Every structure is written in structure tokens, then in C-alpha cells.
Image 1 (cartoon, rainbow, N blue to C red):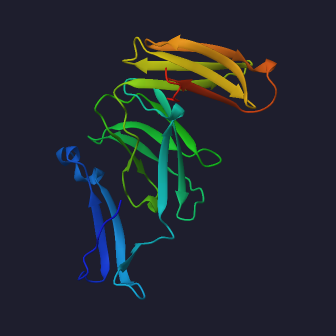
Image 2: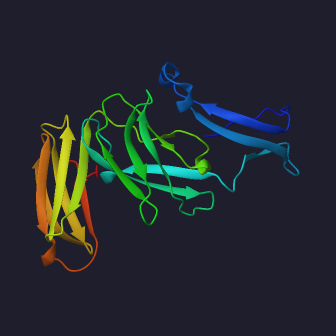
Image 3: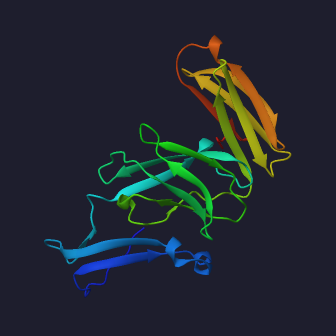
Length: 226
């Protein structure tokens, strides 16, 4: 998106404040805030140049649900990663809270940077990460919104030489899906499933060559959904 700054604005620091209508019912601290500096006119243009307050220490925090979907009422894992303005990994730790400020769980970067959390999102609820480190500017970072219905894909790489593929769904009765796994562009598993609430399948990994396996769930039109 974009934001037009008036031509007659005075140079200096300003704050961008953004929130949804539903957020007006809760604590203002969960609204998005970003400080920018209206610095100067661009050469040969009437447009004003803007910069963040400190681009050198700005950080970004992203949460990515396993399988790409986040469904309420289903316990799921979310990976997270934090980087600075130059794209370098930074360590992060803090709490996951809901709109009421209640603690849901804690999070902390792993040994090599990225980390993982696991919890069950509730219908109609929103969640935020509150990092402790100063690089994150005391902001609340939103987690992905949890959909009311859909499917969630989970893969467990067991030490016993087994790969477990687990599909959980909500309001998916009567719908057909195709669960497939490929390796080196070769199909190693394929099965049509009619998902009610839970489906699981297992592949023996000790019978496979070295490499990376991709597990995908498709709908009836063969569109990938997880």
C-alpha cells in the first residue's frame, strides 16, 4: 500500500498508526506503530523523502504456520524468524499473547536463529508476539490470522526411519483431497482421502534415497491447499 504525505508538512519525525475496527475494542498497545522521518525534498521532485527512525536497527519478525495454513481449534506448529534491516538473522525471545494481553506461550530463537512454537488458536481470537529485545521497538507483532475452517498438514520425521504425514481438518466432511509426496521429482506416495477430522499415513524413509521429500495436499481440482 501507500500513504500520501501532504505537501505542506513540516520536516521532522511522525508516527504512522494503523488498526482495524475490531481492535478499537481492545488495548491500544496492540495497534501497529512506526516512526518515520520526513527528511527532505527529493532532487528534481516535489515528493518528500521519508525514512524510518533508525534503519540500521530496524528488525522484522515473521511467523509461518506449518503447511501454510493456520486453522482455529487445531494444535499447530509455527516457525518464526527474525532479521535486521540488512537481512541478517537476529535472536529474539518473548511471549505470545492474545488481544486481552494474556500469555499463551513463550518463544525463543533456536541455536541457528529461527525457532518454533506450538499452540491451539481459538476461533475469533488474534495473537501477537511481544519481543523483549530493544531492536523490535517495543511493538506487538501479529501472528497469522487463524481461519475458522480448512485443513492443517503436519509432518513428523521419526528417528525410527518413519515419516508420518498427519492431516487435520475442520468443516471438511464430504470433501475429497489428494495427499502426495515427491522426492527428486518422483512420486513416492499418493492417496485420495476423504477427510472428516483426522487422517494419517506413514512412509518408511530407510527405503528411500538421500534427498528432500515434499509433502503436498491437493483439493479435488488439484490445487495445493497445504
